[in-house]
Image 1 (tube, one colour):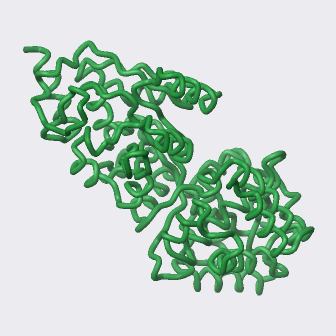
Image 2 (spheres, rainbow, N blue to C red; image 1 turned 30 degrees about the horizontal axis):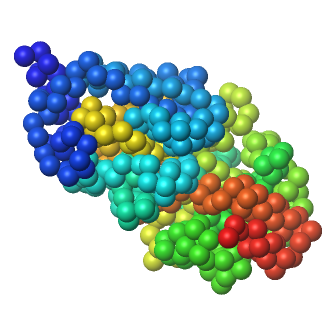
Length: 437
């Protein structure tokens, strides 16, 4: 009887009425989960969470483990990408794998290693708990056709513009809601004799990645999601009208005299972590900085969120494209099909799976059934609001492209274009030529 009560508790937790059978035939037929005997079972999991992140993850699943009797054994590694390839290709994958980049997951989907969640989970419950874009990004091509390759867990947003709140408010500036209002704010700041933007793309061997983020933001704001996906997949060339339009929107800010602190040439030599610090000098040397929510760790010490600094959503250039948000995050995929693995995967499709992590800080939930009341700091709460209010989301494009492009020619050639050592035509041709056949 104790086992039955535990498993009924799990059913309430994951909000699903039935689960597919655990006979491994992928038929999707349902059965009473109380007959599956999951208490005392083990579900193995691998991913990149280490140190504090690993602790927070384990704490976030503890209540589920206690209620179901399933032991989720998580193994984190800083060399995750290399180690997981060895395990999967060697025929001994963990039951569930956490991928910080859907591009790596897609390589295993393409080879037929990943189980289609359409045949194993209550997909009505899954679909109702995410906006369509998250589902789109989890849909991938296997040898047997398109499958639902995973469910999204912890995420974060990049489409944020940070500013010195005390000085911003004292100057009488207003947070822009539209691209036209952002342009008006830029003009006003320049008319006041100041510089609107703080931008830096220097990052050692990874110099250029902030420029790729900016271009991805502009792609989402000037063209369709379909074109963004085609571009990321290599089916829309960098030297195309759509990409050139996005670069033009970016260049209007980056290359206009007086728009960026240090000017165009200073962008390539300024560290991405140092760039926003000039906003907090007295008086500020720049007023705006676009970056993901991790950037606060590079701010000067002793600043208080919502008092000393704040952020707003980077508006869309084309209102017809809605409110797109550039995101990053973790997607969980299933490699072994057993009843207990299905239950864990169904759990990961609910806000309850990240509730503890959200409350302790450092995680944003993409799930519709999560609550803003869970967020204990103002930054995480506002980032969650940006994601919840998004009409569409897309993953960082350079992280999805082949490594020779996304972390190679894309970074390098954008840096060359920004610094002026190459023309736009030369940079775009070089990126296109580097794409693997």
